[in-house]
Structures are given as structure tokens and as C-alpha cells.
Amino acid sequence: MIIQNIRAITEQIIAAAHHANRNPSDITLIAVTKTHPPDVIMQAVAAGLHHLGENRVQEADEKITALAAERARLRWHLIGHLQSNKAKRAAHLFDMIHSLDSVALAERLNRHRAALEAVPPLPVLLQVNISGEDTKEGFAMRPDPTSARLDAFVQAVAAIAALPALDVQGLMTIAPYSDEPEQARPVFAALRTLRDQLRQHCPNLALPHLSMGMTNDFTVAIEEGATFVRVGRAIFGERPPLH
Ligand SMILES: *Cc1c(COP(=O)(O)O)cnc(C)c1O
Image (cartoon, rainbow, N blue to C red; front, side):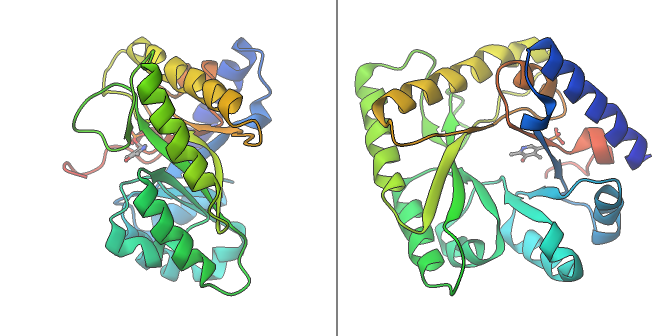
């Protein structure tokens, strides 16, 4: 069943990319594996998915250990909020952090990453709260931000980009939950616009990545420029509630 789900999602990704005149190979499907045990995760890996997303450091740590034999071919993404007391472990465990949401957290991650031997800078995405929902983590932004708000964000991005053990690669957002995927489109379009504005202010930052789109809205996110889509339920089925 997982393999059929992945096949169907891959076809939808290709169709959405073609619809937007994009190259499907520019879009990476992250299998969101939270709540699922290693044997279930291995079914997705066997079906060809090597990018895995977890939202809790402790839970990821256990699975990364259980799947240590596969470590070289897997890419583990932290997609959930990172508490500062977990920054040290996260700097060691993950291949990419999607949920960087403050300069202070970035400084902590940088310090811990720099202390590791022989590792490249840690790729990070800055999480942005575009929709203004106060339940969402991330740098507070709005569609059409005021110039003061945009300036403050540019300053934060520049400060993080100056940290040598981090590699700022783009932005991430979570759209408000809706059964109607079109509701998410303005949020995704606003994230892309924000990325383009950042590029103008920080010309030495390429910011190639936009992490946006989940089970309900990943095709719309691809049409709006997503390079990472984070999909859980469409691959593995419904999770137990409260996760
Ligand atoms: C759980 C989660 C996802 C996946 O959500 P689905 O609806 O299961 O596809 C994506 N991104 C984040 C940040 C999540 O916490």
C-alpha cells in the first residue's frame, strides 16, 4: 500500500510540475515519518524515498539509531519546532533543519555544529509564519509585509547567513489546515515573493529552496515553487491524533 501511495504521489508531483512548466527533478518528496516505526519507514525507503522528515528530536534520534545501517543513503530533515535545549543533539543528527525560527537558536546551532569534527555547514531553512495564525511557529511575517517588518527579517537572515557552521538555503512555511487546497495558494505565493525580496536585499544568498506543501496541498505548493514537499498521511495513512 505504501508503495502504491508513493507511486500515486510521484505522478501527482510530475503532473503539477509540468502544469507549472517546472522540472519534476527540482522537487524532492520528503516522507514525513513521525509516529511511524522503523520497519514502516523502511518500506518507504525500499520504494525509493531517501528524504525523511521528523518533527521531534528525541523521536528522530531513536529512529536514526535504529536505521543506522542505512544512514549513508538517508537524509533526515527536522521539520518541527526545535527547542534550544535540543540544539546540540539536532546539530549532530540532522542533514537539514527546516524550522529555524530565531537568531538566538541559529547561534546555538552554529556553535554546536562548529564543535563537530569534519562535518560541512548544516543546511537550514528559515520557518516563516505567513498566515499570522498565532499557533504557528516561525518568523512572524504577512503577505505584503510593511517595510519595517521586512527590514527586520532581512537583518535576521543576514545575521544567520553570517554564521559559518550554518548554510541558509531558503524558507519553509506551513499553510493553515484546510480541506480546500486552493486556500493555501496565497500563503505559498507569499513565501515565494518573500524569498525573491530577500534575494534582492542579500544578493550573495541564492536561497534555492522553498519547503512548503503537505498531504492536503502539495500540488498547489509545487505550482507556487516548492522544492521540498513534506508528505505524511498520503504515504502512510492517518496518524494517531495529537501528533
Ligand atoms: C506532520 C507534518 C507534515 C506532514 O503532514 P501530512 O498532513 O501528514 O502530510 C508536514 N510538515 C510538518 C511541519 C509536519 O509537522
